[in-house]
Image (cartoon, rainbow, N blue to C red; front, top):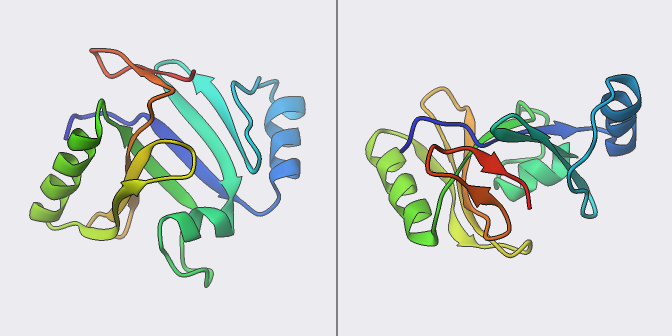
Length: 139
């Protein structure tokens, strides 16, 4: 697995309230906001707000209040790379939460938890650009 984080996603209780905080309060500008999620381009990576329960469900975690509400993502250049990274994580001692599969937004992703339970998504998003140095650009 390349040493990089492409996306940090916060699972939030109220998406509208969180958008108001980041956009009106902090002055951030969204790069993309399909229904139920909003993405912000950061230097070399992205940041997202997504409903907390929806994020837990996407990672196949119980919606019981024990999930931290934060996921880290490592975007890949292909579906095969997603499968390879998940296999590497499993061999290293990760717990696979969700095997890689094609997802509703048109990409391919899976989730694992590291030995301390921190949740990672490994994804291929054909609509985003991943430069040779790992820099991610939305759209």
